[in-house]
Length: 125
Image (cartoon, rainbow, N blue to C red; front, side, top):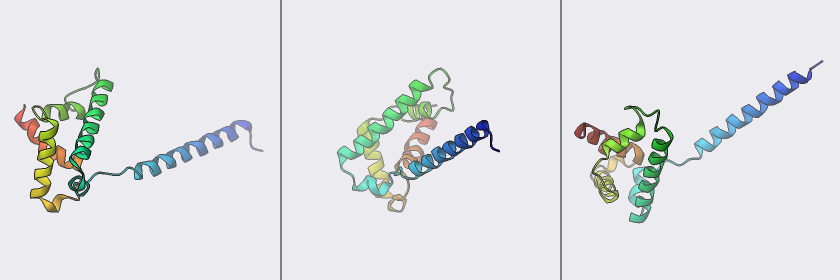
């Protein structure tokens, strides 16, 4: 005979499994903006995307403020993008994708990191 605690355990595991499956489905549904979408977007849409990234980084910095270290992604972005403006970042991405049409399948966030943040980190050390 199955005891009450065994039922609870089984029910808890079932709920946990369903919750994990739901998270996988949601994660797969999150679109990754590529250079192709970037180049097809209006100036206002591009700025909105960049503002969203900036807001996400601000939230991350605020959340991790006390525990932040030199490997923190938000701090690295800030240091690497030092001196950049919203328009200079937009123009930099536009210029990069125009000069590298084979790279339009790559995510914009990846391009931003490798083409702007990483070189900025080396420059701003």
